[in-house]
Length: 342
Image (cartoon, rainbow, N blue to C red):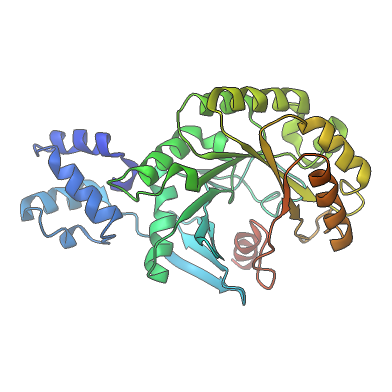
């Protein structure tokens, strides 16, 4: 059966018309799904019994089950969800002073093969539908009994490799009649799929684009991120500059600092040259050590020196607060453990 959460509001109106119902019923259903957050069609009490039966016969609600939940002493919660087809995905809830941020997955597995990511080495299965992406937010909100304020597409999978479903999910999340989370509270991360960066620039969505950069030259970046063999740094930076021109939006560059690899002063100098003059921000990430991984975390001293050098030379840089360090913090670790235990 079809997942009713896979439809945006306009599509749902067309579905209701096909069932012989008035389009305004779609808005009522949207409210039940995303504002009241019901889990059964029978809870939609302002719909007729006949319509509720039609919905039950034609659609599923796609309510996730929690396979496992880990809670950190800092308030971070990591969920392993059953996506109802024998597969599992990870979602992380992070607590900040400005609200609750959720990191969602967009694929089951990932094709990108980044060497510092725990998702690498786990078989790619498929992309998630828009409804499966949105359900992560609903499932976490139902678990904690509170509203999510910020969404980051930085979980398992490459968001721009699942472009259409991610864009549809963002529009559902952003819809005032849906979850009503402002686009400026949504971040989309990419490892650097250049053609899709241009596509995103044309969408007129005010979300934040985050680029996983992690190195300042092609040799080093290719050794960390195979996607660089398809779209090298020069192509990526040009696409970013064009994105800024088209959207007038600041880009966030993610830079994971790995000991004795990309964390020295020369790397900082090269990064300044690369980004000079761009409307951007650099988010420095103390890298998570993963099992059998090649890279380990840079020293706190090096991380601070790197940040200070960037800030002193006109590049705004901050260090990402480490959350969930006492649980399986790295993206993919919880799913990897679950697969190994099956």
